[in-house]
Amino acid sequence: MTRKRSSSRPARTSRNASRPGQLRIIGGDHRRRLLPVLDKPGLRPTPDRVRETLFNWLTGELYAARVLDLFAGTGALGFEALSRGAREATFIESDRQVAELIEQNLATLGITQGQVINTDAIAWLQNTTPNAPYSLVLLDPPFRLGLAEPCCATLEASAWLAPRSWIYLEVESGLEVEVPDTWQLHRELRAGDSHARLYQRSMD
Image (tube, rainbow, N blue to C red; front, side, top):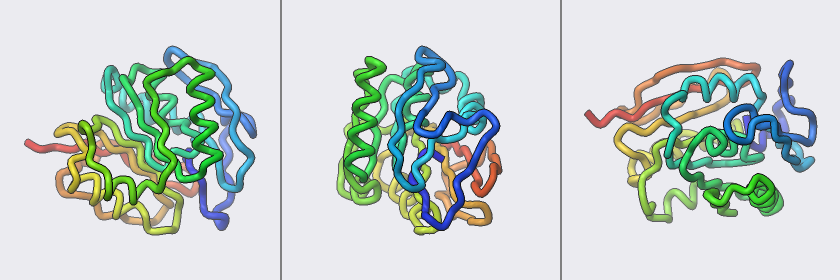
């Protein structure tokens, strides 16, 4: 949704999507702000309708949240979380130019609690020791590359998640992803060629 897609996937459109080359923040302190998006193959902001649905699901859960936006792409989901009250967000993006634009957009909005790391998401998860667990993880890897399950397994195994953290996972329609037993499905949404699921981790 926010991420770079396999070139075999057609671009999705939405009745209320941001204009090409722009990302529109939907809610919170930065509502209606427009941010530039690079013209790169497969790089598209999450459609407004899908973002609005996701953050409606998370109403009441974002205040002071510590957010990890993996495969950040345009950063649409991380920006939305920060606008709506998240305490901080870490954006992981492997493309240098895309990562630099996320940094520029954070500066444009005057957001100081966003950190951008230009690196491969799975390698970073596997080789980094978290300073503290995250309460919300936004996981939207490129489609058809088999990245979802390794990310889910590493998130669970390597102390990245708080006991009651939320995990948003988006994959291509028809793909069944095996997630850790501690993740309980809360909501799901099918939109175009994608299947979005929101899980909550339960350590009870």
